[in-house]
Length: 451
Image (cartoon, rainbow, N blue to C red; front, side, top):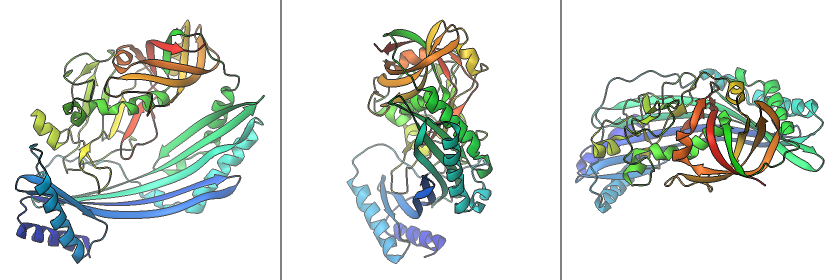
């Protein structure tokens, strides 16, 4: 059944069954993914998934249901299940269906040219990466991972209050991992490319970067256990920020599961730290004009010059805190209930280049990789203990690679100890529709366990 006709039929039946305000949330995702190993296509998949969720107010409670099929039987099922769901809810939290709003900002989130690139050209990119990597250094044994994928996402929201919105976005990603071997030692280098324009996927630059990192780590040794001045490289800093992003989520704060609870307007980070969520970011990948409730998105300063100014809100959490929504309502898919998530969350870049960050380090470490981010940290207490590797720095110079170390501390102390922010903003791997980025961060002191 055609989308508009289906929605009208759902609303008509919902009204007859006693629903007050109602909403449908339609999502269509297209994905292409391929990997290459030893010049042969190792994986090739194309998928297209679409579905629609219905939610509505019945007797003051919000009921949910969803379907993948837009037909007459689904109309009855959606209304019946949403009604039963609403009747079973015991929460007294106030929930609403949003009215149409103004102030939407047009964003650059979709590049049609990506669809014009043939799948053969995308596969050829991976083959060229592999060939180039294997010719650059004899110590490279193989590509442990050689992936290209692109995604297209379409979203429509329509409700009985007159809201009728739609938007599309797309993105391509390449993830390359090279394995270097020397004297029985194995080290890997990783390179990720995120872009909407396939012309920016330069196989030579990717190959050079991944080979340089893999080979530079050969000969790694540990360091003595003590506190060091540490620079988290941009991609590593972004990964750590991503692991802790929920502490700024108003829903998490309200459940007393965030170390940032009751800290609004307090100093929570070094004065050089400004953390924002920006759905209008130039060259951002999580750009959007509206959130999953149809609320216009906005740039939100979460931390400004070290001071915590705001949490991220949807309508429900904002109503509970008697503030306005920040436009951060999110749904992992049409099957999911509403929650809160960032769009493009990043620490604003400073003025220092990477070399400037390490130039005055008498003895310190550059950390380029953290392991165990999903098991070695606690987002409630802020404590973390993570295996790491990187490079030893003495008198402002990189001396040698370092591994077999553990960095440990607490997010509160880590943020307060940020003394400098680089100008080299970098995104980490996307988490659904959430994108996290950071420049390199210089930390005054961090406990390191080695030998």
